[in-house]
Image 1 (tube, rainbow, N blue to C red):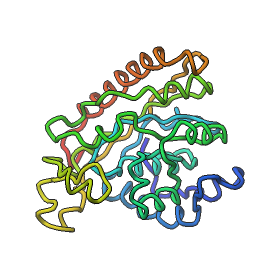
Image 2: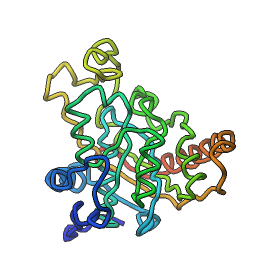
Image 3: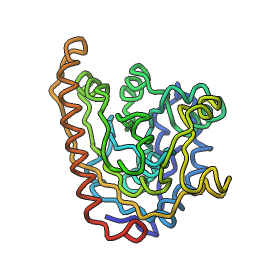
Image 4: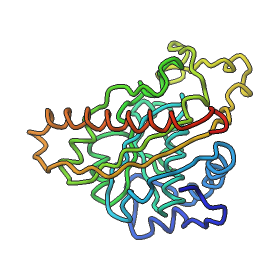
Length: 271
């Protein structure tokens, strides 16, 4: 199912109007302001083809669990845009704690709907009935070298523990196309840490070409939402081992989805 040119999506502010005051300082007006730029990237630049959006519940809490890639988190922005366009739901996302050490980035992420990745924060979002996007590979997902693209790293079991404790469905999300927007050939960890980040990505064009080299390549993207998975509810204090096993199961399922999507495309830039 593609994205219609005539789609007139509900604004983020309208989608969340019934939630009341947000404890994480989201700025709905800013989110609506930047949405057209992400929609341009979605529809015109990366020409994202979306399938399986009907698997996302129309309301209520849900965990969207995706593979991570691309050196910068454009994959998250495209998943959020896909859900907004296809289902009219405003997705919240969890971001790594290192971002809190980069105040301008932290403030921007929070204002557009992000929340630092802690169990307590995720619990609160789900309690409020929000769809929540997370990447259980963490930083290692975006730090993969180009030679290992589309090979998923190990999953943290935190999402499975949340799902079991709160009886929230998990929707696996496969993304293909993001791995090639910044072909990662190296990492400048010293420079990155000096800037408050785990590393500075080195690509064939960045930093050699400066800001021009930071432009992502116009690859062709595919996003597939899988069928929801529900785990049997368990008490949090007794569920770690089972959550670890379920995380392995979801990782294998998502790896299969990614591999199938990748095998279907004809080329990196034209699909």
